[in-house]
Amino acid sequence: PCQLLGVLLLWPPGSSGDVVLTQTPLSLPVTPGEPASISCRSSQSLLHSNGNTYLDWYLQKPGQSPRLLIYKVTNRESGVPDRFSGSGSGTDFTLKISRVEPEDVGVYYCMQGTKAPPQWYSPEHKPLCWVAQLPTCVVCRGSRHHKGQNSNEFSGMSCRKLLL
Image (cartoon, rainbow, N blue to C red):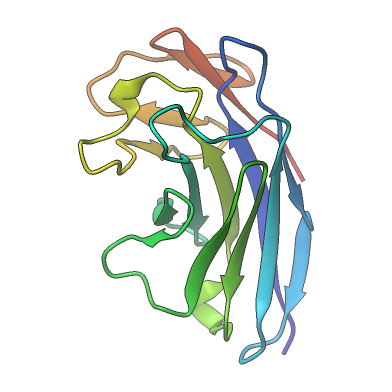
């Protein structure tokens, strides 16, 4: 049976101008056992001056909190099945699922942290932020945040969610 993967995107604006992430497709019909691919394109290069590229992928399954899948483009979070892989550089990134399983259905997010404050990331370069329940955006551990109509603002940064 055909299932649907939903796609949303998040970005925090950078000091040198907003970083806009464009994700395609916005929705993706999939069949269990078949591969799937989601692209994420940034309006600016996400290569940080320290040599890292902070592009992360999240999955929110129905009725569950979002889960970090991939951090720094290619690194799978602990416990994430190896059928998930991330690739890309500069402005173009891809999340691939080699063989879709029924439990993979949900909403996928790409989020950039290159233009975010350094405290968003741990020394291991894992994001300390996560996607909060919709329609809020990102909440960082230990930070104060204010929920606006379309965004959360914290630490001088904000993020927005694009609706399908």
